[in-house]
Image (cartoon, rainbow, N blue to C red; front, side, top):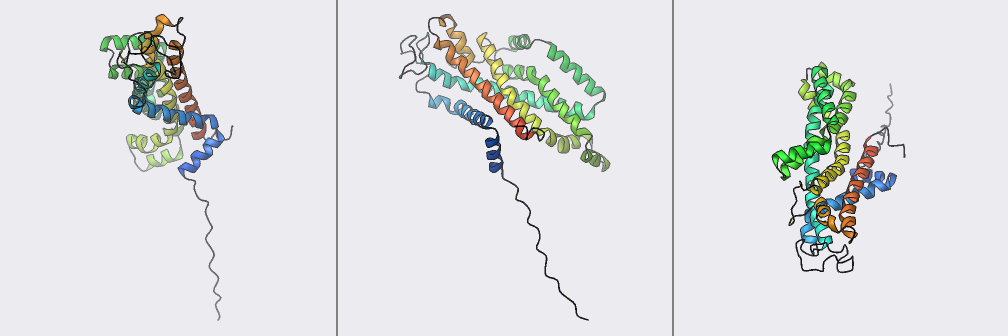
Amino acid sequence: MAFEIEAPVASPVLPSVPGVSRAALRAAKRNPPGALAGAACVMLVLLAIFGPSMSPHSPNDTSFERLASPSVSHPFGTDNLFRDMLSRVIVGARNSLGVGFAAVFVSTVVGIILGIGSGYLGGAGDFVVSRIIDVMLAYPGLVFLIFVVTIFGPTFISISVAIGLYMTPSATRVIRSAAIGVRHQQFIEAALSIGCSPLRIMIRHVFPNVASSIIVIATIQIGAAILAEAALSFLGLGVSSAQNPSWGRMLQETKPVWQAAWWTAIVPGFAITFTVLVYNLFGDALRDALDPRLRGSR
């Protein structure tokens, strides 16, 4: 009996998974404003890190003309204390963004613990956390910040923690909602069936599946934290000083001369507005890119 040998069947060619750079490029083409906002966010971070070495003058140099209007030598003019506004804006980015990132770190960590814990476990713990969040949302944010900073003093840690706790309710609500959506998925039931503990499930299964929501809410909250720090600095409760400025303190110091020298209000105000805007746009773009329900909406 003759046996026929069949020719080997070629294995199907699987489509290659795009790399991170290719996916980022595709997302940038889909949402150009978000890509520009992301690039601006990176530039602001670099400015905060390397700002003191990049400023054209010392932020405390008082050898210039008082209230000089914007010119080639002083693009942002000078303030009422004879100092270069451009140099102070560049150096002030470190305080403003530093407090903003530290506050978002606090709110994100607390929001992850409370949001995932209450969203996955439910029960009485979820009820208690929800009521605490409701109380915190009902309390005026600025009053809470002034109360905490007045008690513990205007230090970097106290201001960052105060702003972080002020933003914790919104972060907790978003993360809790995402955790509730993951709680009844089949892979969670499979993990329960093989005896995984609730802590292991929350760390290994729930957290990775709500990471996109965490990234989005953290990015959006950076702008809110910077705005809160500017408000405290304007009220004289910020971490900055005359020698180590922030954008909010620049507004406070130049308030008496706003009518005589318009640039003293416009320059730091625009820095705050621009930073808050680009971080909000970048957070919105991240939400569209990471949420599969929104990817085809643009």
